[in-house]
Image (cartoon, rainbow, N blue to C red; front, side, top):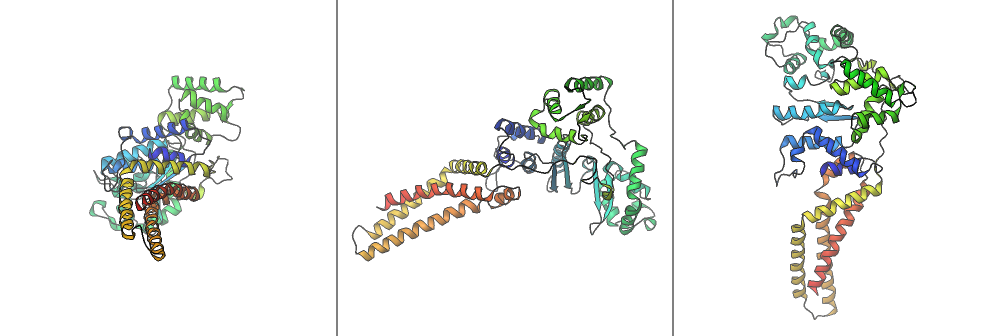
Length: 433
């Protein structure tokens, strides 16, 4: 339900309800949350799902919005190694369908460290010591004279190196470059070293398990059968049919379309590029588009590499208003005991004021009675308002940061609380008079 509301509030209004549900179900499968899909998340007072599952739900709230780029700040902090591995595997699956994930990682085990396509290592002060494939990090530092002790976690080893904490295990530590020297070495020759290592290991152009002859022949047949105009390239509409019919992934069409768009030079995707993209999708390998390790050599907007669009069409203000209002009504229904308690307190207060003021009195007494009743209702409305917005403060900040219309949210909550005020005022009046 959290993921579904996230999809409703983040995806464009033009996306059908069925497709939003399909996206939510895909995210649940990718994150491995099927077994708790209908379990309350819980809070401090009421226990729900575990900490690792809660982290994955938080990640899912961002995935349902179809992000091109996802930033995560220490998603594994506070989790045990097994749960951390589950979270990273979920992110890895998300990357395989065309998205990019950038994350700060905290004390990763070796298996997690090797799951990353690229890593950036920074010394104190934010200066780059290494920026390249995780699989080449060990070789890079070994080429500088460092030695990885047997059984040592590579992640811990490189952290020791960039912090200048050389132990006896390093051997000849007085001759090894310090953190400042490592920064200088990277600036001068780091990117060139990485390119040489890639070339030596055959990682310069989309390496990975190749397609079999049968798979390649089948894909060529698929390409030609969907190339309806016979021009040797697949345009956007033809690719959509491939994704929907061959990959059976119409629900997440936009994700796979993002993979193919990286090969589109303007006229469409040619057969060689189509085969390379399908190899990445089918074999689960990361795409390599010739982006160098040196950030100064990254493709710019003027490059021939097609840049993904960042123009997100938010849902309409009215759509957000309706979703927030429906959500508020559901929250009231599930907290009926709180509303009944409020009604009981209002009735007790109304009976007390009614007995205090009686049925007879001077005009001055009437004025006092009116002031007392108005004061009581004013305090009641204040308490309701605090409960309406105060309890959802952090959630509101998060949704506002994601582009949620604050105006729509405010009026939806105000309308929902107006119902409470009217109901409680009616009970107060009935009991008072």
